[in-house]
Length: 395
Ligand code: MG
Image (cartoon, rainbow, N blue to C red; front, top):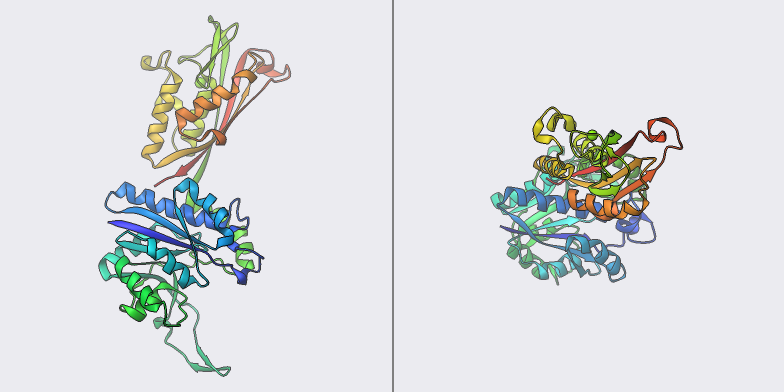
């Protein structure tokens, strides 16, 4: 089934008192909208993996003044933007005009912590019950006030806190919004519009405390304090470190580093091609994936790996981590060598690493230095390479 996603980002976020759209202020190294869009991207990847449904389009609402910035955020994902209206309802109504999928999920841009499971629960709930309003049972007692006094106390087990995503069959929610267009009503969410004109929306009890909407200034402060952990959980970034050393002494006139053949008066002694840099890269990637080191996968006692092209071994490593649902997001490689001079070869090394690992070139760095005459590197007896790798869980 084709699933459309609307992300609401057209608000001004006045309650956050930031003087501008709270979704676009610097937040945990990016901004809140970026993390919400990343959540949608993870949903797409997850559905692709399952193969039954697909996210066929993502539409992000934006105020005219934020359009340029939100367009730029959406560009890498191929998501569309539409201009919002004066209220949340008006913005959603505008976005709905563009929607073509059979089911539409509507998500607050200010909920960066929504998990893939929550999105999937909503899709299932729509299929089973016709609609889905993410909600969690209230833990506090809630009261209805009148003239400053408690007028009515709903039974606590009957009260839910409503969140997003909310899901509907597109034709029904379009009809509900069309009917609501001129009724003068104030609707704070889509379930209310649906319930008013179609039928009572179904509660999808997958809501959680952590799926909170960043509303007030302190939400951003609190979030900034503990969100590094949450974002890491959500995006599942993983870090690994690798080190390798090889000694000079092979009778040849080059060394191979990151797959680049570099003239040298001696080669590196190794069972494989001695690409000490790629060995560090492989160990870092395997380590980030929680796997064993390259010696385990490519033992130097195995004649199959004699003189092996390390680039091919790296291809096997990439294949292995991909099977775990991981991709390489960034690499930082440092090489210490008294010889040969490496500066002229750095760009080519970065290009190779990008080709071999799939990580974008601008998130790969290779730095090189000498060891100031100290230790085995300084004495020109070998080369040492270090690598830090960052991997991201893509499904
Ligand atoms: Mg090695």
